[in-house]
Length: 534
Image 1 (cartoon, rainbow, N blue to C red):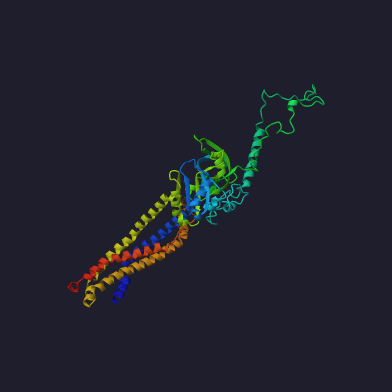
Image 2 (spheres, rainbow, N blue to C red):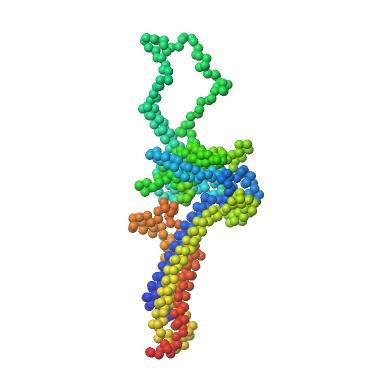
């Protein structure tokens, strides 16, 4: 009983111990906050990668792709059919995007990855539809321009996200507006710059008073034979008149652009779009022939893709796979069978991805095919994040180690100061183990108080971290957490109980270990030597 009473007395009266308690508290709270934020960032990053990639990816090693996607899908089903939920073929080619930037009309060129997807199945193998800006496309992707209804805010960020100027006009209304404006401009140019008659043109004689019959044909005379048109132009093998493309009623092949390709930060601090759904863009890319040739075509923006991963939002453009195969020359003219670059696979149980990957790698020659999980495709980034978290934990744990050295110094000082008391206790019958237990219990008490306070402060800080962010922004007048940089509207946090547990236990162990040497020194004191000069 005397051991608990002395521990409590030292804890109450030794105000110098507060420094050690504060050190442990700050160390525990800091590690809980940092690990929660890092876990939140890692979870969001993996979640978005998981939405971009399918569970498995079978890629052709050659840029020409693999022949007959249907045959390859059948082979994959024969190998792991009971574990496959959906598959979708893709074609990827490097390309250049060109569009006119807003009212200035200046052409902007951007390097892109031009991706052909199967619109009926791409949403079944990944979270592709979740990142589109039109609700109907999120349900089922269609490369057809919608008549309005596009999101005015980021639907993944919630109602508090900033508005996107111009998105309320996107769609067919915007396309008709610009088509009418272009028509008016062309009419104005025609009026201000009339065609100039040349000497080669034979003017038609106009009737005048001197020669009233100059321009009049002879009465009852048929027109010349060469001027007569047949009733049926097909019978005469004459070409039909070209059909005029009306942009107010028609669109080119649709494309879905990465949001960052056309977005920019304005002087007002808001994000603006240089092009809207309904605008036309030009895309140039190489064919699959040898040698390759550059081909270009006009496409109509039908939606935007925003995964909040700048690596993808600033580089991807999606198009119907058939359109890209036709333009690139990937369809065999004799069999009408097309090539594809990759096949995305979604599994019924994602935890079996490694086992299924190994089966497919054995079936497909590695010199022709590459089989990867989504983690394999992003292993470098994932390993870097894990290494950063580990190093950060080691550095932060040094804060608690510093607190341990503080406890060690304080305990040595207490042992020297309480030499007389230790001698009296030993002379009254206290054992060396009992004396040692006093100081070990004191160190445990310091650790428990510090860890308890750090646990409460850390959990409260994590819970109110976004409110604290808002207060800091109001005080400093600057953005503490800019969504344009981190691609999150709020700081993501995840509290993992096991991580919190090992932080608390680790701090307690350090506090107890720091008291072992002073406790052993106190336990070895001989009562006669301790009371010799008293």
